[in-house]
Amino acid sequence: MNFGVSTSMDVAAISIPSLHFSIKSSAAISLQAPRSRNACSVSLFSGFRRFGLRIISVKAEQASSRVTDDDFIIEDVPHLTDFLPHLPSYPNPLKNSQAYAIVKETFVKPEDVVAQKIVVTKDSTRGIHFRRAGPREKVYFKPDEVRACVVTCGGLCPGINTVVREIVCGLNFMYGVNDILGIEGGYRGFYSKNTLTLTPKVVNNIHKHGGTFLRTSRGGHDTNKIVDNIQDRGINQVYIIGGDGTQRGAALIYQEIAKRGLQVSVAGIPKTIDNDIAVIDKSFGFDTAVEEAQRAINAAHVEVGSVDNGVGIVKLMGRYSGFIATIATLASRDVDCCLIPESPFYLEGTGGLFEFIEQRLKENGHIVIVLAEGAGQDFIARDMHAAEEKDASGNRLLLDVGPWLSQKIKDHFTKVQKMAVNMKYIDPTYMIRAIPSNASDNVYCTLLAQSAVHGAMAGYTGFTVGPVNSRHAYIPIARVTETQNTVELTGRMWARLLASTNQPSFVTNSEELKEKAADINNVDISAQI
Ligand SMILES: Nc1ncnc2c1ncn2[C@@H]1O[C@H](COP(=O)(O)OP(=O)(O)OP(=O)(O)O)[C@@H](O)[C@H]1O
Ligand SMILES: O=P(O)(O)OC[C@H]1O[C@](O)(CO)[C@@H](O)[C@@H]1O
Ligand SMILES: [Mg+2]
Image 1 (cartoon, rainbow, N blue to C red):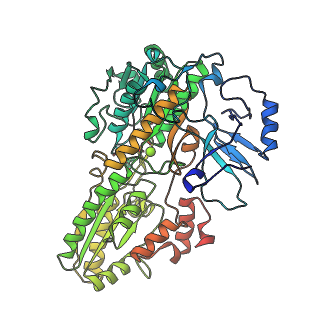
Image 2: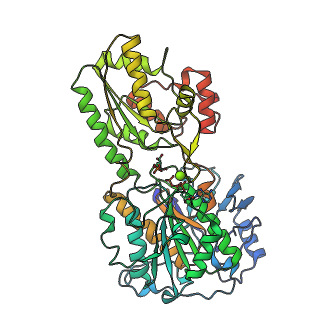
């Protein structure tokens, strides 16, 4: 089959001529024409066969797909017509908007999909694909009948306000929607607070500020109460901005809405400073946070470079995933050692952290360590005999690794090595996420928001929007919550970091740590390292 691929960018968005299909989000596979409802499953199925396409198993609710050779799998998102088959559609008003008036290809083709795997060989399987995001020829809402709402949940992240702003402006400027509500204070705001009226004027300047204009919270997700409230208020489009926990909550809201047979689209916009959301390339605000982290690292470097035996420690966010610490380290060049949750470390003995610190102090007179907040948690818990605590959303509350490590280093060098170190500990954790997004994150946030709006207007629901290999796609929510993105110790990114800092890899020196790393990384690392 010839996809007519000409450039590497094109590989991500493959159009299959004349084939219109979708795999429904139920356990059973069902093939259909693009929402016209009059397609013949059998002929399409033979269509797939004709092109040598085989679909083994697609279960979007669990988002588990088994792929064998030459499979072409589409993990599609639900559509309102899946449970409201007679829903009328309307021509997309976008065509008449001044923004799109002279655009050559205003609408994304229904058969356009985005490939999850972009690096291929001649014999590669076709693998998993997601529906390409963007405006559709038909919409399933009349603009004056739309009552949309936006909610933000979980921790802060640079760019939340930009996404809120662009959802409001996108709905209004592109589709002529005038009725948009802000749900205040996260999920619990649905049933415990009044709503805010959102207009382009109200949100005009909010992107210049950090935080969330709508406020946020953890905990308080009560699916029935939330859906009751959505129903009572006559809301028919729900935009939910939040991390993995939030997206899990959004999946439950979508399921309850489908169960009740309501014409309500649920669109998730993934947000997390930790960059731990699966499938998508990167979460918004991440680059801004990394940039801000440079200031702290730079300060630590200047401080320790000005004194004898300076030890600088910078603690950055990253609960289970050390992306911020990793990328901030790679960006900086002033960091001697980066410690992340995925890579267990040890302090004493050959190949341990103390030995490395001593070596760098002898060589350079100073050392800078970047520490992800989730690093070494088991180690500290054992050392401090601490009980596990959780936040309102059920996330494990972390023990403070920064002061713990600072003290350990000070004690070791004063008592054991009889050498005073000059400790400079910097904790900019909240500072890196409480700022407004930078220019490129602002552009990214705009794309996310507009894609979410196009998807909801087109009647898609139960989806998360995000870039997959640089192309925005609609991804079944369950697909982004089934796993968490972590820094792969067996991947080249981590190897690049080790090559750049020349720090010990720790896990290679100890069988126990190899096993632990394998557990954390959920792969058989011990066999690979
Ligand atoms: N499994 C779940 N089912 C339903 N709702 C959930 C679930 N997990 C979390 N939530 C709800 O989602 C909201 C946010 O969750 P959480 O505090 O874990 O943050 P998050 O969305 O993961 O963002 P981040 O981790 O980036 O701060 C909370 O209101 C919480 O009650
Ligand atoms: O905002 P809180 O509740 O202090 O939570 C902080 C956590 O939120 C995050 O920023 C995002 O999950 C983590 O990096 C951090 O551990
Ligand atoms: Mg989370």
